Image (cartoon, rainbow, N blue to C red; front, top):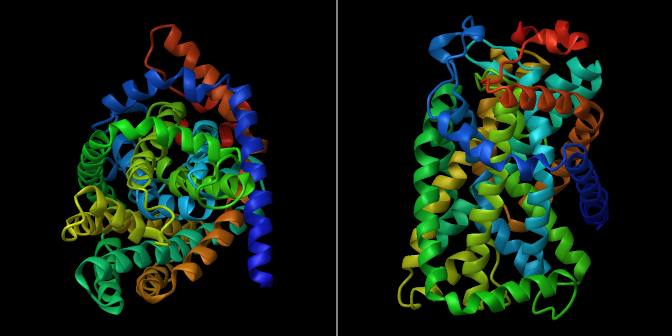
Length: 470
């Protein structure tokens, strides 16, 4: 009871309030960078299909350089997963259809926070053995000079992503496969743990290549199915939109609780899905080789929209058009049943398809989550033994997550996510001024018709802390 009460106040009030305030502040001071530069985001993404051959960073290990697109795919691999299918279903079940509205709000506003944290990660990154490394722990220590704060974040993100979030991912896969194929959860958990260990011992290049190939393919397949199902129910869309908006403000509650519950669930599950402001995406953003920090900041901002406004919305429409959101189904099972309903209810073809999709979505998330933990483990103490121990621990937690209860894994994930997010939000609120300087520099060079290039001397007071950009 005490744990549940602490979790509720920490996540529903403190974290949600902080997320909204910081996101609104960055939206104002950046003049809505997440809206006015959408065209630039797509232009950069189109150019980033191959590594950015930046001559200024030619002393980076060329054979191990991670391209801007690969870094983007790695972050999408972590974003697009359980949150998009099971998380959306959970938000609707508890918070009602109105929770989707608040998912959209936190995505639109939170995209500014994602821009700031990813840009800062690029600015303060360092050269690692096989690729660039960076993230909140690095910009907290180098930008704020607070080693204790940086280590605290590193510990929290390692626990949150390497352990807590990975239990959610494996739990969702195990539930989906038990529902569709009758496979025992311990068996599914064992297979997942072995596959996870095989891939994570391959290193960041193995992870980024895996994500680059698998994630776009599965995302397109899922979105095509969603488009077909929504198209079949196109006449119901106006009603669904009205239901979402009305429920978001406490009117006509068809399921779930009050406006407060809808807001809290929408923002919490939206954060779990798109990770804007959470401090996780910067770890992937820092690995990219680009000529200016803002490039990766803008590309990662686009990832928030893809995750929430596209993939999460697709799941929400499937569920709400089915009318099954108040039938006491939990998590991924609700999404599976909704698709089965749209396909006529004969057989479990929808459940099988969702099981396959969630396997790839959640499994790529497990791999990306592991990397977020590894880069922070190495920040605390770069030891091969410690890294190996962490890898083995991730494998064990992947197995345990598959056999744990749904409430237990979500409760564990929520409280560690809140602590990590608050730690990062405080840091980017203090360091955001540097992201704004970088944005101004980038915009100035674009107006001059140049391909923006950043040099450490551009912000003299940080020159000694940003040697990657010399």
